[in-house]
Length: 84
Image (cartoon, rainbow, N blue to C red; front, side, top):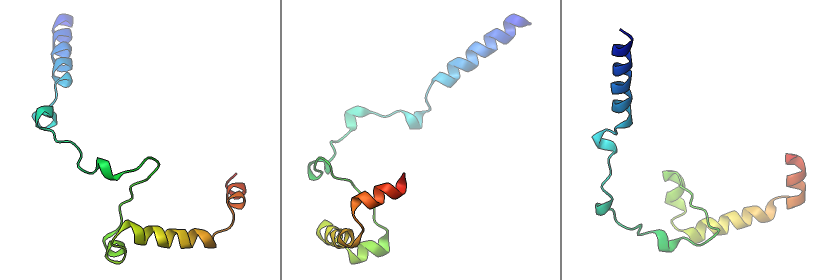
C-alpha cells in the first residue's frame, strides 16, 4: 500500500511539471519588439485611459501639461520631508 501511494505521488509530480499546450511558446516564430527603438533610457511608459487619450494625443502634449503641473507643486525637499 505504501509503494502504491509513492508511485501515484511520483506520477502526479511528473504531470505537474509538464506545461499545458497553451503555455508552450514557439520562440522561432517570435518577432522583435517594433517599439523598442522609441524608448529612451530613463523614460517610463504609461497607459492612458481612453477619455484622457482623446485629449492628449501625443507625448508632447502630455509632457507639457505634466511639466506645467510640476511647476505648481511645492519644492522636492518639502515633498520628501512629508513622506518620511
